[in-house]
Length: 84
Image (tube, rainbow, N blue to C red; front, side):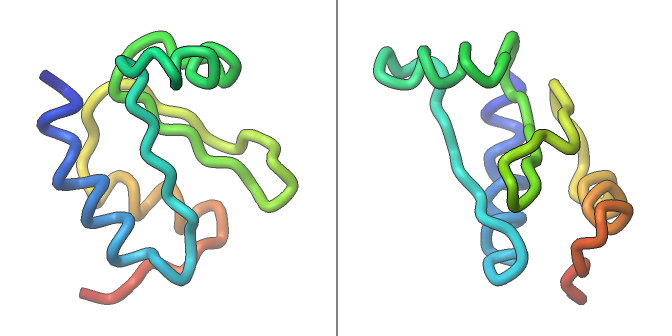
């Protein structure tokens, strides 16, 4: 299951980027969250969506991807990548 494989990656992103990005986890399986997931166009899980400070979507990916891939994406968007 992609969500299970992605959880440690997302948790690491949340921890390492805590002062640079706001990370929001949305469990699309939860009935209370389905409307939000539909509103932002979640068609499968995991789905990752990055919004800029104005709330405009700037990047989207579906499926599992690696932390190095994420770091490259956010760097191209001007976010400082934390040093490990």
